[in-house]
Image (cartoon, rainbow, N blue to C red; front, side):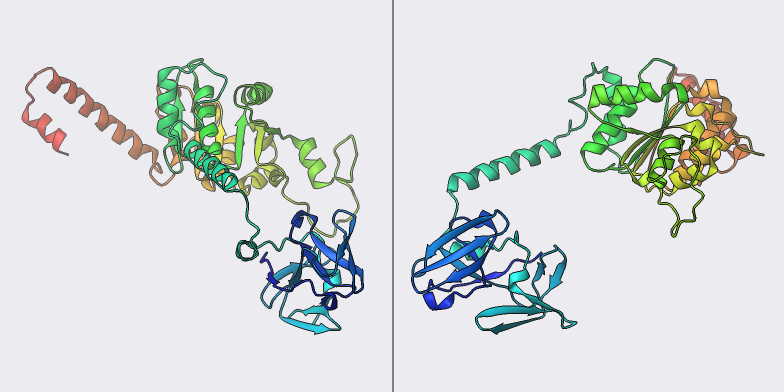
Length: 399
């Protein structure tokens, strides 16, 4: 909202008239004042925003006339925006008009409008103590340093970090839109690593909307760990909660959709919160919710125990299809899985396909590349040991 320019009107007894709006130069926090009455000796001003009524001497009242100009955006008494296109004055009272010709008398201006433009305060000699300015400057500098610190989001959690966890979290969170497979044995810290990553991305403003999909048995565990260790309060979503958001007036314990026809379709429940935790089975069993989640405009999605997502070249499980649809429209994706050796090459390919479907589009081609990489790795080991390679092997390395 643009602020008005103050008219440099002196406290002339003839300048006051009931219905005018003035602002106190000594108490601007009172908002816009409304002249109730005036005579040659005094003026009575009501400040509706605070309920205060003050009486000033008409000759030296610390008041300044409030006049908005064409192009300024103000609010009416109901708080609705009003763009000034024209200003008229009649009987010392101002009326504002917009481009449609709608009128807004100054007496109907929003009572809490701020009209303290910096240049107006300087010209009137009303400035703050320099120490306050220096304090604000120092606070802003400290905030900038904290936000720009390379450890932001990686420290502050109630955890004892292991070096490899800190390294992985920093490496992944440093990427613009991380799409990563965190594969490790059970109990080696994948949950902590992924939590550190989302904590850093969330604190830096790069991941405001986050969805975490986990097995049913781990929903409460994830919720408690995120809240206790990182002070992140995720909303747990399930079908009853989604229905309560879609149909807030319904209190049916059976979670049945009201039979009355609705004028508009229900809103996407996933837009009701920014940080959401949900069981993956719910998505797999409910195509409607999976489709709504795919339209959730997430910045980051985390899938725990992603090795349970079943996929073959011929078909994919409902859970895999739900995650694939969400992953396709989400810039950041973390898959927490078992090691590739446990998954098998087909299972490993299925996970990589979620991360980058363009790069990993053909299973046979992936297997052929994997075999070639294994041969190259063996030759590299022989070279490091000082063994001489044959011509055929040198040719293989040149491919």
